[in-house]
Length: 200
Image (tube, rainbow, N blue to C red; front, top):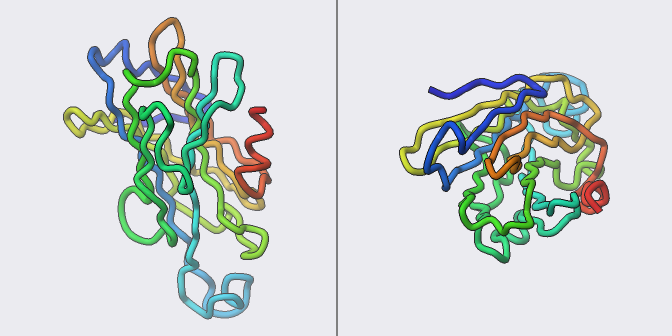
């Protein structure tokens, strides 16, 4: 049974799950209904429709000195070491279940990599005038690939109005064991370039 986490909670992954190596990280979001008349989304899209939100999930791979090492995203779907594989971009956010999935083999993560930070940003957010106050039902979840059992779910339920990037959570190594931290932090970074500067 999956453990539902609250913002700021941390939980062990490998110590409590002996043999855990391959995990799937799923991220999801749904666009809110636009108003039938007026309002920003209504004027852009017409009444009663849902906006297409091209949110992009990415993974920052950080070494022990918290230096940005590799970035896995829609333009680079696989890490050089092969431990992280992004399954591709979802351009709308429509549909049930995970919008984007990232597969990780913890046994192949290089020794110098101590943190895998999962972020979601809105593509071309300035031009589209979109922010995370316009989405709902966002979450990050971790699944054990061996039995397809969901281990952890963290619902990103805060009001993120005006924010354009979400730092959803991170898988990190501590004393040789992998753990997960539910972060749920939002920023006004408009893309991965500015976000990467936080880890430079």
